[in-house]
Amino acid sequence: MDFSLKQILALVKKDILLETRQQYTFYGVLLYVASTVFIVYLTAGNVETQTWSALFWIVQLFVSVNAVAKSFLQDSRSRMLYYYTISGAVNYIISKIIFNTLLMLLMSFLTLLIFILLLGNPVIYFFEFVLISFLGGVGLSLVFTFLAAIAAKAQQQSALMAIMGFPVVVPQLLLLGKISSKAFSDALQSGLWQMILLLIALDVLIILLSIILFPFLWKD
Image (cartoon, rainbow, N blue to C red; front, side, top):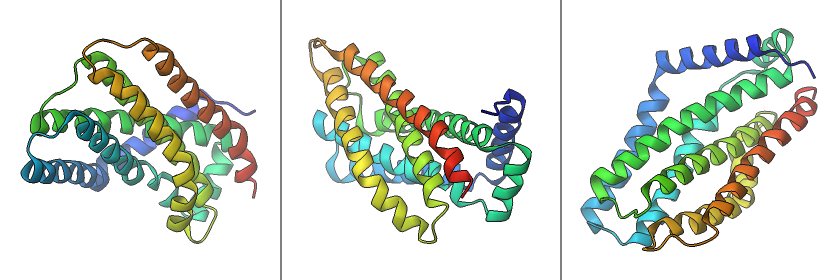
């Protein structure tokens, strides 16, 4: 396995520079989050706790799709070949994972902030919910990073993303909804930290699968 920290950091820096120069993705996603939450605020006002949690994860899902899934789709075949010659598959996928994780952490923080400002803060155990939201956002970014890498090899990229993403993301969203619901209860229920550790293990598993399987996809 050809692993080079210097090449990984260079690729991450490249993605950060491209994002800061273009910025249309960041502001587009931010506008989507703000407009969605504002519409909910105008139509429903202060929503119930379960509705607040459900809306939060739905918005997180679409934020992940719009902000993360484009990471491979915007690269042409010639550019992918260039990256292959200078870095290798493992360094390239790790750099994408790091960049998309950082981007999703930022978007998760902004999403949570907008929700609190417009819809209030019904979370009782706030620190635990922040940790869950960050881990959930990272998990969604990891899933769609790997799915985008697979879809980049196909012609119908958007359709393939939707077909592959639905059965993979739904169990993860159900797990996130079950874990986050414990942060809204008056008493901190037992098993919360065990489920958080399960969520961390799921994220680590996705990272390992991406690193192991992506080189085979890259050679195609």
